[in-house]
Image (cartoon, rainbow, N blue to C red):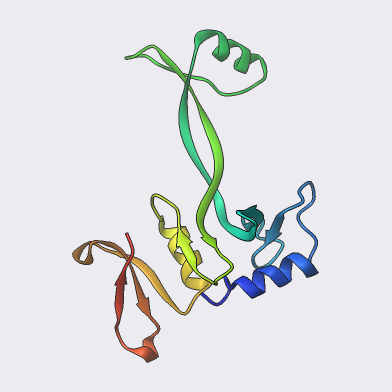
Length: 153
């Protein structure tokens, strides 16, 4: 991964300012693309970089009292008529992977949608895509190096 090189990310943390309102959130490419960023964090005494691409959403079940309080705050609360459950949608950053100090990339997401695969492809030398005949997400090296496929998920 050319753009997700540990030395490059470390240089960005030293040279560029983090996004306003944070101390560890830095852009991967252009500052305009504020949904593509990385977080610089400490883990076991070493600096790691968590690669984030937008947000993922999940439903959370809330009680009736919590639902009324959330509605007063202006939040959207949904009532499921068949189960009488109140739910809300909660967003959290979509972490694609972790870059470690030995320049390895650890894939940490449960799934990679088309946008995430395209983002990874644009940052590397090759293509990530889904191929059901090969078991899910695969990586193909660039056109000049032949047609080597590597399965991921």
